[in-house]
Length: 78
Image (cartoon, rainbow, N blue to C red; front, side):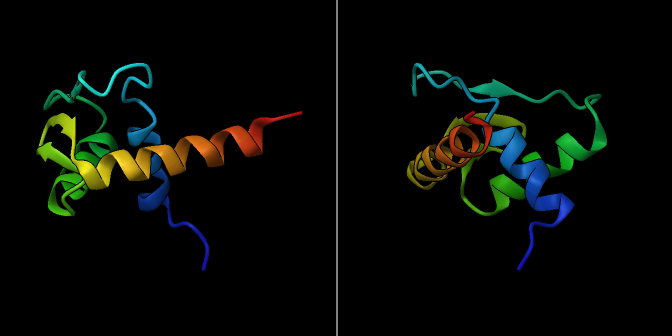
């Protein structure tokens, strides 16, 4: 199975959450790139974030965020 563009959009959005504090969230404005808005809604629908326009990561979201960071670091190392 390969990553679809929608999955990549979701992972990229996850990686926008602050990594130094899980007490901070993000806000995706309604006039943002439609792909980002759609990814945000999908993450909310899946229970990964607590608001359909961003908010905070849920417990599931924090787990996925950690995995996304690990994948990003592994693939970007020299």
